[in-house]
Amino acid sequence: MAFRTALIQMCSSDDPAQNTAALRAALQEAARAGAVLTLTPEVSNCVSTSSAHQRQVLHLEDDDPTLKAVQEEARSLGMWVLIGSLALHSGEADGRLANRSLLIDPEGRIRARYDKIHMFDVHVSETETYRESSGFRPGKQAVLARTPFGILGLSICYDLRFPTLYRALAQAGAEVLTVPAAFSPVTGAAHWETLLRARAIETGCFVLAPAQTGRHAASEGRTRTTFGHSMAVAPWGEVLLDMGTEPGVGLVEIDLAQVSAARARVPSLSHDRSFHPPESAP
Image 1: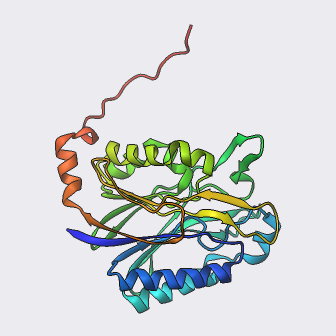
Image 2: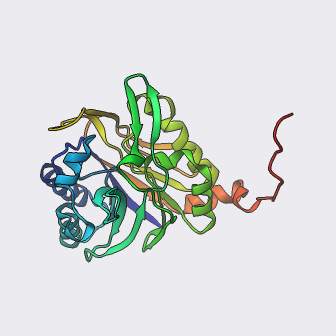
């Protein structure tokens, strides 16, 4: 079946209330444009490099005001919403947060949860280093979500570099892969489009990737800049949407018949063969 989806590109600050207001407005715009599924970026509620600030302004899932606002909007607008992710208190003893994607149905109910598995612990350059695992605990479970317009396979940002996750999702039934992100400008310029197109081609899935963009206002800690370029990619690898670097709402038509067509042309998902791992090089 065919349906219209919307990607929201944001420049979230470290003020959840401000970001929530922007989300409400964008969701309403998407609904007016006819979207039945709308996706938001990674950490839609708070982009911050300060652990102290995060501990002060963030909430447990049950108490999170951004989540409650999105549930209200989904119910009011009669629309499915994939919150790319929220930064949330996890309740774990070590105090680390959860980076959690949540799928909300048109009744405002949570239909799926996915906690980011792969942590962005990288040294991009002398001035750009990240250690996500110091503030966030990794998830352990891959997640599919069934909707009236197809099966979604959930992921978040740095997961994009681990193709076995997406192959597992596709082989378990995913037709649409979601990749909400807050990609670094350096790695984004070098790898973002290539990796998204590769994941689509390898799996025969649509890939929907709403992203954070621009320089993010911060009251504490260093400011972050993200790459933007929210994208939708078809199962054969064509880029259907590239939103550039400005915040906004992008629309794309998804026809799931393209999934079966791409997989019929190159049925690689059914061609796995077992093999012995390589031995150490002599």
